Image (cartoon, rainbow over all chains, first blue to last red; front, side, top):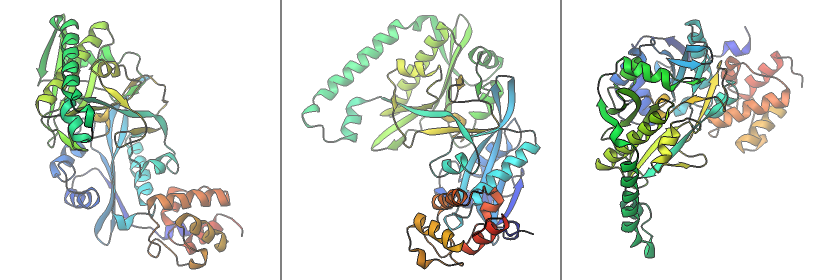
Length: 365
Length: 77
């Protein structure tokens, strides 16, 4: 036996059952702190056990009877040049402080990826944070497939300006005028944007109209998670978050849909922010117009719920970015908390591939 | 070979090379965290012209073991 095999750092268990949720919750609370998602057993039952594409492959490391690290691969369908195929999304990379620096994370990823491959999931994608990205892109040999950028739209200029800076001095009297101008321009744009020909409705039932929308929207795409009605039903019915979906119908046809987090404004740098998590539109003039109207409506609703800022993480090459820009969203440059690299293994796609990815494709919950 | 390994680890962890010996490990070096460990792995691969498997990386848990694994890989001092 060689030296590498003789000294395992911890016992690694690879499984698909949900028998260790209690250990997992304790690990997540220790690593990232209590929160609505990873502190709830129902979150794992939904993400690991309730996925229509099959159970998640979990790799967990135990030392002295305690779970010290964890990683999971969630099966999803991915659209590629040869049609849809099963891929894995790497999630919940968790390592206790005292177990770091021992290569445990890389071993868990390798074991989970290998187990996924045995189940027919030969490719994986991740959108890692700054701690795990270097491991994926070096030792684990993942390669870049672009990035998710953060798009931001101030909703209430005056309040945001006051809260964020507090040092506006002579500029302060201009804030009410700026807000008035933004509202006026938004109302003019909405009046001229074909609102009357487009019917916006809340969606609570995802039927074959969403399959048809996905087919029209994704024509020619070579990258992205398949967003058909099965995906919508599962992805946005999580036990730990509340999402709202709106659809836009043109000539009786579902031309676009938007998903946002409802009444869950979070606070960052003194301001409350709401999140648009997905925008899907057919690639027609009507679809683009419908998507822009949906984004405008979602922003208005989140603002009414108290958001000072609306954010959306999206692949900058996505066609849906146009709907964000038409509503005043601007891309935040550089690397920051909202930036995520997209790394893949076993997928034939590069940064210039056509397709669609948003924060909903990695920020599960 | 051990001195070369110690030199790499000392440079990355910013500790005196003289303070390292075969028993130096994550348990004895508080700077030995995840990102520093990755830097150590990549520097060792470059210095000795090897590529470690993921399981080998999981075993690189002290200066002595690193030297032993490098020898098993046929690296000469």
